[in-house]
Image (cartoon, rainbow, N blue to C red; front, side, top):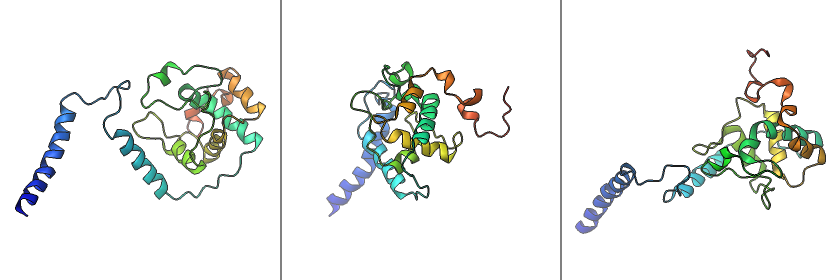
Length: 191
């Protein structure tokens, strides 16, 4: 029994000490181009899944309408496309430099998001820590987040009106010259 207790105590001390020394050694991959640390993906996705599953989801996510898909396409075009891409375009320099790599929704075999709508809604609203995915809760209304969630539900089966928004020059898709982060700011006065 004594050997067991000594082994347990050494494990409790040596494992955290080994992790600390690994992190302090400069060998831990921290650059965006480096491979993930051991267990990094598992720890991040497990924590995020548990958080999302534990949240209440009071917002009803109805099936998108053609008008809400166009509205979602406009938001996507102005706020999301720089990281997540547009049809028939290569990933941007910003997207290529991020880690983890943001999903490219218009690449072959990538048009459908497998996550449930409530999870997509949560990710858009709250962001994802340490990934570059911002929280849009202060910039977009709940209706705009719902429209964007519906749009992202199946980017491979969008109506032609939504696709034309994605293919148009970006200046035409922004609402009345306001930047996306100022839409909800009542103190903002357009120039």
